[in-house]
Picture (cartoon, rainbow, N blue to C red):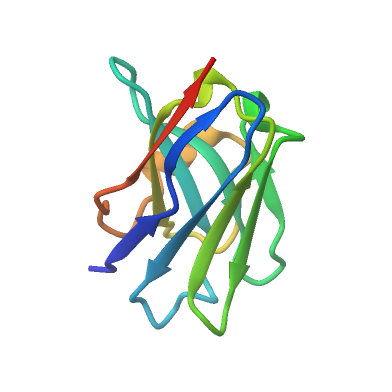
Length: 129
């Protein structure tokens, strides 16, 4: 199973920025869609952003559109999430995952069902008001 390691989280004030990274072990990294998820205390894990395999088309959940940017570095097999204008409601543990598809479904709720890789330990993002 594909292994992932997330990093880059931390404590930041509202309005601040963070850049999350995810390193993957899979050799098919460049062919698959990859996604970021998050889980806030007491809430279910939700899809945040997805980037497709070949076209690098990106999608975002409505709550982060215009603030978050997903990207991938094929050479480094790294997935990134640049987060700006952070809000307290962005506080969560963030996870990355490889999907079974090469394209991103238009529905963030579908990304969980398309997960191929195992879950990493995640990286904690805390936004203070």
